Amino acid sequence: MAAGRRVLTLEGEALSRFAGTLDESFARAVELMLRARGRVIVSGMGKSGHVARKITATLASTGTPAQFVHPAEASHGDLGMVTRSDVVLLLSNSGETTELADLIEHTRRFHIPLIGVASRPESTLLRAADVALHLPRADEACPNGLAPTTSTTLTMALGDALAVALMETRDFRSEHFHVFHPAGRLGQQLVRVSGLMHSGEDLPLVSPDTPMSEALIVMTQKGFGALGVLSEGRLAGVITDGDLRRNMTGLLERRAGDVMNLRPTTISPESFAAEAMGIMNARSITTLFVVGEDKAPIGILHVHDCLRAGLG
Image 1 (cartoon, helix red, strand yellow):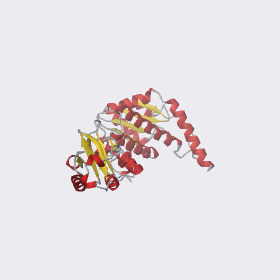
Image 2 (image 1 turned 90 degrees about the horizontal axis):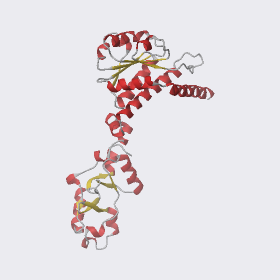
Image 3 (image 1 turned 135 degrees about the horizontal axis):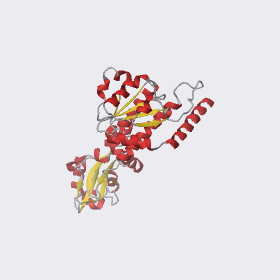
Image 4 (image 1 turned 90 degrees about the vertical axis):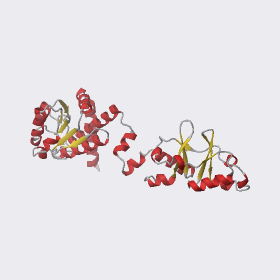
């Protein structure tokens, strides 16, 4: 436990110091990535390579096209993946990683913007880079001071900082995030009501004057266990199975307007389906009418729609 606390404290302090050293070089790196007509090519060797893969994935999933290129493979043909439309982000703690030499030379020959990340300002990588991002010197957390630990934490955090800065500059919002995360729990949580609701002819709607004998037929045919009552183009009320049970006496002699609940629970089409699921669970209901700003019903959402989408 003591070792764990020591490592976390050491790396946390290094991150705090790093935050205080960020300067205009960081802003220039973000600007280079924003201007790229192609992709951000990320590369590194060894542990830096693993960090580079993670940074690549984070960039790609947050709206910045990115690709990892292995530096050793680059020297055997993969340099063809790096074009003049790209920006290259190279990671090396020492800045002297031999395997990066061909990538550095390729960017210089074809005038491809190069962002270097290393801990030594005088290193080959940072001297060659168009933008040099200098990692502060920090002790590695391993007892021998050799295993890449603090240095990789700093590099990974820098990658996160770049990705978030790009997101904010592009105004990359949750609905954009869903485009790149359609599967998995995250994608499910970001589904909009508009993507799951039923609309058009599927809507179970009647007028307030509709006899309940006819309203029940519509309610049964549509199969949602609910019925919307439409008045002057707006949702005036809702009839559910519960409303039917509460009005059993003389039900067939009454009209929809006499039975409806005047305070229906509704939701907007832009709301997240997870929010709709939460409302239905909290209120013990199985359907929600979806309404626009003018309170006109434009859809209906059933709990089963949410469950099929993976929301539970």
